[in-house]
Image (cartoon, rainbow, N blue to C red; front, top):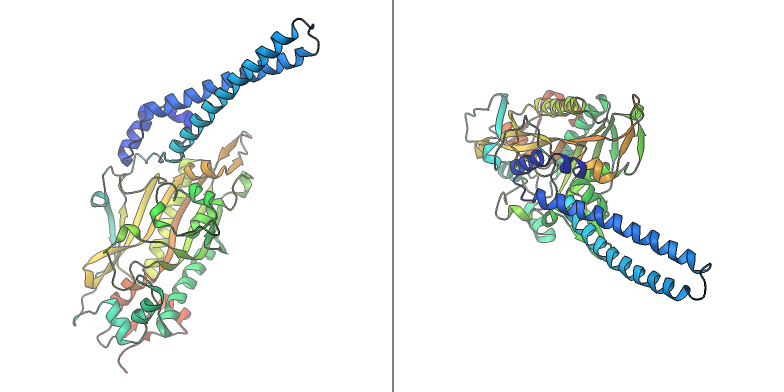
Length: 425
């Protein structure tokens, strides 16, 4: 969330930032509510102090004065109770709005309403040209006997997948390659659960913004996680770190779950949008300095570009516009790999600088070495790799005329040295 004091002191800046994000929160009403809460806190405290003073004076009061003091103490007690009720209601309303305040976007981010106004910063790699009619990823899986899509739908419902043999190994191999790359860049590999209490969802920013996308298990009062970022963001909640501990780099691996409620009727064929998937996530905690966090933002982007280059996939880098980047983001890039049969690029990575927006929700701070002050950290996240989505461009770009799949050189050690998998027997 944003710093309420910053909102009060910079209302026009906040209004402009909210407008760029498409946020309809009334800043003037928010500020008035905050000031009202402060007034109620002050008046409640004064009433409590007066009631205590009267209560303490009852014992030493004369018999004649005591009834009047008791009556006045009772009246003030009743008034205090009413003030507390007003304060509780006003504070709850303020908290509700504050949980919905988005981060302010970077001045460098393109201003736009939706994904049609995202800006292509660069394209990397050559789009393949086939001397045969390329097959889509579902055809390639079926002809190689690598999938059980129809059977698994009967068992588990729509938007589920089951892959076998070399394709199942390939999925794991890609994750291992990415994990090794992250470890070589100083990331601490961590496997995390996919079950979360409610509070971390507010801390990460899923709630209250994306409730329809989250699986909830009411009997256990827990949620299924859509990314390791959710867990990693709250792992050090309420701590005060030493600046010497920063930056903290996590490579989080976990199964992930998303309802895809907002994607009804979209990408129902194959592996693009499924309810459960595997994801390796990059997550960074660094000091509260925009130059520092932007440096890490570029580093995370560089690593993901290296991943796509190692997989020998043509891709483009998008800078996401203000209206498409979502509430937590200060600045965001998306990477999209080329999908031949769809004749377009499709997202594989999303790379975001969150600044201190999440840290204020988790109360994660550090003590600055220079001045000893306690400050909120900055957090950043980026996809390492997410499968099976990444398998779609991989299969289609590396397919051969006989239906076999070429394995890029960097991935071959993770595939027992194989240069090709599949193909007509």
